[in-house]
Image (tube, rainbow, N blue to C red; front, side, top):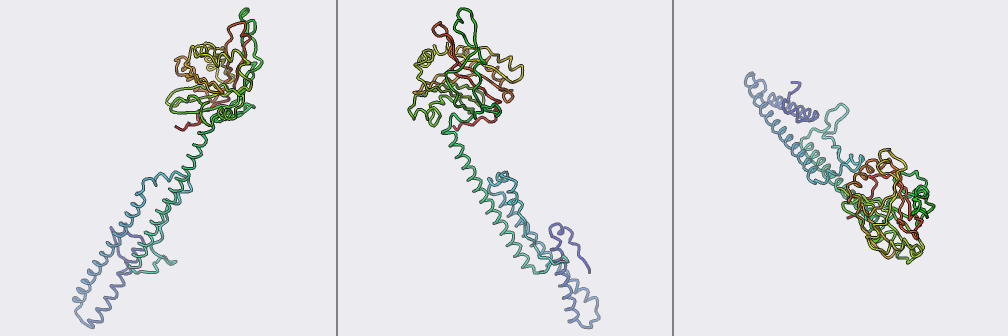
Length: 407
């Protein structure tokens, strides 16, 4: 007898395990054969000997079957145990996405069931040793697996907490710094002041000849900008603790802020806030003083915007134009007056026409260079000539870079 075909057991046994069982059984058969020869001596009844040996073989085969069944069942139980350990904490599944390096925690290498010599045969055939070593190795592997998952989960939670803390700190106290400044006009998604001479305003004799002149300067300087997104309108940014406006107010200086807050509503509301500052008293500029201290009706009748797309597709340039327009009669404006500021919150969604134009602009936003000027319209000879309050240039704004406002 040189080999045994284990048939359906073969799929459940490793090669080294099959070899162990085969050699173990052959050894027992050989021992029985020697035992029978010693006891029967020269008995001529070969038939009796063959029958006796056959019975012993059947008994040994049955014992081997029981051992195989035990090994198979133990293997299945251990596989089930490892599967349960891997599945129990549902949160562990999400940890696999942290990084590629974490894969080593999930591809757990199992220790070999047998120590093998160079010729591939087991060095120890004891079934008790096999069972105990295997069970110990697999339980140790499972315990180590769970520990690594626990450590990884703690690491991830700590990392997320740090991210949330940093994000919270940024949004609580830095209104006025979410959009960077770039005077060179080279940095995408940035702001700068633009040349005032780009815009035409009413001259001193406008009521007589209707002629406009190039602006020569601005009353205020642009000092900051915000590019935000939220699930609601973000009003009165100037009054929020930690904003650039409140920082100056805390110092008690003469600075006065004029804030233009352009709101684009939708499933996500985008907010473009432009902060302008002057360090001279508003009383020195009568028309501006009347605007700041006047009622909403007066403000709506005088606040004017001049838009200009200096770079972008022709269709957008034509849609936006370059003509000065009064904002109040066309769009809803909410005014917020503080100790050292006036904020205008302009709801672009309040007009169907404006909403359509802005939707077109947003579609091309990253390809556009947008320039704007703001002023208070002069209607009387005493108020002429007009002057620009402020200007801005927005260089290739990016929707994806809008900063999420913490609820």
